[in-house]
Length: 394
Ligand code: ADP
Ligand code: MG
Image 1 (cartoon, protein in one colour):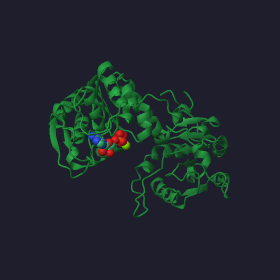
Image 2 (cartoon, rainbow, N blue to C red; image 1 turned 180 degrees about the horizontal axis):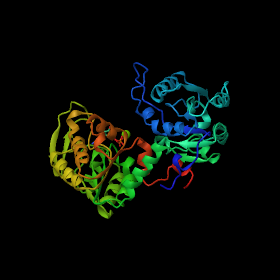
Image 3 (tube, helix red, strand yellow; image 1 turned 135 degrees about the vertical axis):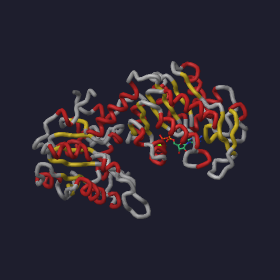
Image 4 (cartoon, protein in one colour; image 1 turned 90 degrees about the vertical axis):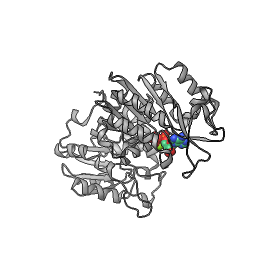
């Protein structure tokens, strides 16, 4: 870790502006918080700062209010839930530019006490990374702590801009993400396998390019299988595939330093529908009128063999249309193989992929399940994330 963390600085008596990711899913029917794991995840950082006698100002975005106040996107319920988990009353500090000045509320905090700002994206300066808004946020505190890995790929006022004006360090969550993602890309644990699936090749070209330089084997699944089959000269079925996609697949197949594994058999259907009849076919026999919706049973075994032998495993993207029972077996098989690989370092990222892990109850079998969908993908692509770059070097 070449970035400073909350352990590297003295926070006693200081006010810390802590950027968290409390953008929690809300149940559309009840309006209640559907999953508060992001709130719980901030506990270690909050606890550390409390125990060292810091004053804490939490801040987060929630949803997409686009620079305006949207009543349903206020932090009220989130602040309440955080108060419950952190076992303390969290004060409502509003936002810079509001009627109530956040500074007045924050001035009332005793060491160890907590306030929370209103939804940062109510102010257009947040997403625009307006220096005036970043400065206004910075003026509320002595130290900036970023614990919102899930927002680190955004250069917003609260994720990047504010770090220009304050000492800036990583919280525990951020630190763990950086350590685990760095290990996934750079450690010499071998053999290393990257499993990449998902809906479209276009979304994954960058990550494939980067990972193929850093692992021994790349395993291909999901919607991009069609492009890889076409690049190998097979009939890819009815999916629309662009020349760019076939070119990208071919480039990887024929000039990558890593071994590229593609399916030998697939599950296809005549329509893209949950109740469509599934057929297993060899990749040499994909019917022109069918869509490839999962990897086949033979491929599941081959992939699992390779995965179980690995000592470092990175997985992003389902092997098929995992939301539909008939096309979910490939993804389940891969999930189980990743979970049982003996003594392997295992890292899983991506919204749908993590959802599968949760559904199969495999989280505790993995070394790290990344909380940041877009952020973890960009990290694995080898990109510099603005929210990380902005933190102070050690
Ligand atoms: P993650 O959210 O884990 O990063 P992606 O967003 O890249 O993964 O892709 C997830 C989506 O890909 C899922 O909704 C899944 O249904 C879809 N998908 C997987 N395989 C196929 C396929 N063969 N055809 C169409 N969609 C697919
Ligand atoms: Mg996704």
